[in-house]
Length: 341
Image 1 (cartoon, helix red, strand yellow):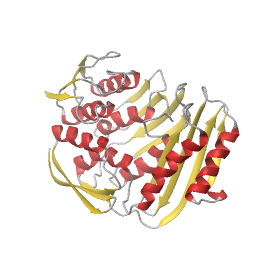
Image 2 (cartoon, one colour):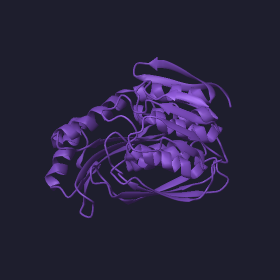
Image 3 (cartoon, rainbow, N blue to C red):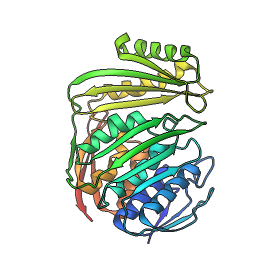
């Protein structure tokens, strides 16, 4: 059994999700303590509990500590099983993070799997659906992963009510990742989603994008959602290059003005564009698991605390060394130097 103090590093839910996925893949039982100890509300929230329940469902795992607020968890999996799965978070918890938890094990199943997840599709502190579709999954397809996702309904914080569907094929043709160059810039695009809010919010945010990034009217568009459960706002920026599409998302809330929401997204995109790295900081930590499993390399513009913590958790399960070097200012190359499972 692998024992993990989940308060280490950034001490968030990513430790739980990575540990669950690799527990199933490597068939090693785990015991986690101090789950989300560094968060204002420690322990398992509904989103994290759904990740546990989902991991249990696909592996018929024996689990203790799977309750709201629990700071300890024991998880002993069996072999991953393909199937048709449905998971409802019950709140605006992130559909994307539940999806990523079950994705890695289900890639090692012997048959295709379908997964339906209900919750939040555009919520703070998690990948947006557009990030999954246009940035995350295309990077995985370079490694031979065949997975499709569909946005059935938008769901924002705090109302939730969103839904995504995914079809996950067995990972038969594994390829090492080589994503060190972003390539020639092709286009840029800004999408402002707003649900049950005034269009003026979108107009303000897109005007700020045009002003700050010097983008044109043709680069920006808004989409009003009238059938969403509750109110919500997301500003999604994308820069498509020949080798990669970088997606940045900022979410509106009552504590920030429309201009401030736009500023957050623009600042992050500007930092990415200043670098020569292929990918941004958020995708970087999410590619560490497949990199550890099949090898490869990529460049990113920043090494976040999530990146460093995820790297440490992965190394508890896999005999793998990540070679990390700063090749130039704001450009880090990450490569799997050695792998033996």
